[in-house]
Image (cartoon, rainbow, N blue to C red):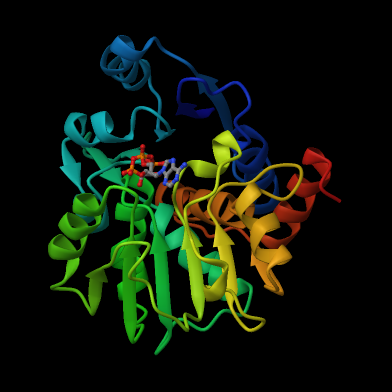
Length: 273
Ligand code: ATR
């Protein structure tokens, strides 16, 4: 049977096996999907061994995405832009192809929530790997403006400079930000520590859409904060998780699974509904 897995550390709580097993059932594909948690300095060897032993493809998550970028034979254009690889496919001619489906997953999830990206003013919080992966797919949707704000301002400036050939992207400090924005995307890891990016509540209004790439069984700190200040449309990263997985599944199997039912099952599994 064709074998796939996700590499990460820690990865025990990954929902990817759950999601891909449902995709396989739905599309009647014969495959198995497991977990691998190599020591941080043993990822390269573990990856090689997996493919030497007949593995067909894998997902790569924290902290291995940047390393995976350097280990594959060929990169898709979107992985090259993201500087990170979250999906690897062994092609029929034996080439390890590195791809990145995170940004496509974000855009697909935003669209499935009815968020309009064309001509919108988008504020992206954070300038780490997650922000980098999101930039090209967001700019491809032709927003009127995309502003990056980051605690360490120089990193936001670097990202804006790197992506300004793709669209109207600028960097501003948290203090400089002036609304109104239509959409705020939190790509920072602040919610992981229950912290908040230093955003003024004055930017939150009833028609704004709020997206946190993090997720949990209950609202993230950022989503709670935004709701408290009047945001009515809030979304967490669970849908992005399912959508990036659907995109990876499509890369591997050439067939696109539906995501709605799988997202519902995942929420049930997490105890969200
Ligand atoms: P990832 O790959 O998830 O993006 P990362 O590359 O470590 O992770 O980036 C984390 C991002 O979250 C960074 O933009 C970081 O800001 P700095 O560049 O200033 O470190 C941001 N971040 C983390 N904790 C934060 C907090 N408490 N407030 C604001 N930003 C935070």
